Image (cartoon, rainbow, N blue to C red; front, side):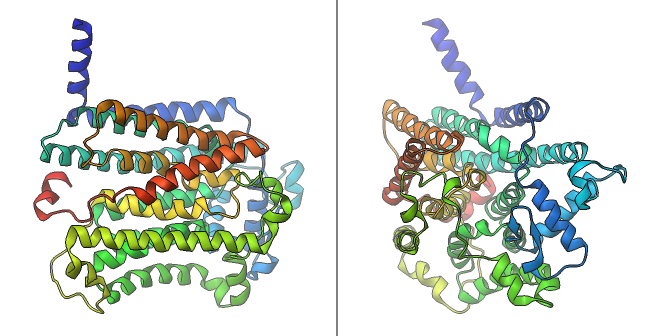
Length: 469
């Protein structure tokens, strides 16, 4: 009995804000050790790095027609930011390399695909992975601060809520597949998502929307899957600016970044660049799909199935837009909700959207696209892995919840099972009917919760800004 009381007291003490930073540091340190061990003990697997270097080398040799920039896996299908970033990676990879590299360097890749060059880039990706972990954990920490503040405001104990959130933070460090995507595969999905998470940090934690839009557009320039976050960002910009004109100003930043980065190609072969860099009609191979392996191949590749998924995607976004509108009307009133429909902003005060609402909206927007994606490949997992604990926990641990500790724990356990169901689906290779079904059931569980659960607080009250933000 006494030991149980001592444990309870210890949990209460460690749940205080004083121990947030040590816990944060502990997770990052554990990630540094784990990721280092992965590079040292698990062999590198070649999938796309050679193709990336072939595409980069073709670009460096002066080719500007996207149709002619190809690698061993096919034509280049990423925007210009990818070429610039991986050109830099190539320059780092070949530092100190001799001119006489063996094997694949006979293709004229300057030694960028030698074992030494690849390992050098793996260590760079370790640093990128750790930076991404810091940014993601900072997003979770910001929401934890808000949860703690709101429960104190409602005179509710926050001890268990803090530990629940710390468990969620720990879950972001446990994915075998995501570690592999970053440091064993070197996919461009990784740097694209790092920039996306950084843009979310700028939006949610710094209220820096212009800079955030620039970083968001940089992420799009590396891989266009980031556009799945765009519907949520558009809604947030309309609510933040409270005017169409202000929103257009922020969107023009995104467009300007794309124009500047793509100019060498847009000024020479514009149609070739637009068609290949943003290839929306791309058809993927059935053998690599992770999410629809239980479907016949004939159905998977047919245009009718693609239209069904697109309709479900757009319909879900439309439903959520209605839900978001109703939530804004309920929280802020109809007059303030309709402010964004004006051409210019009428009010002069600075509206601050709550961090939890920004994060939830962008993650939910992306997840809707994931749930109805025509295909998911293994590397696509990092597009939304870090959002899964956040979405599940935010839905379950809303401040208004008055559920018992037992019921809350049961719901979080069910959410954890769904998260591990997704992890299982992405760790079975090759994908099977069973793994795809488990993945889709896990997706459906979260999708239904998003549809039926109330939204977080939309706007931060002025008196809260200095205290909690």
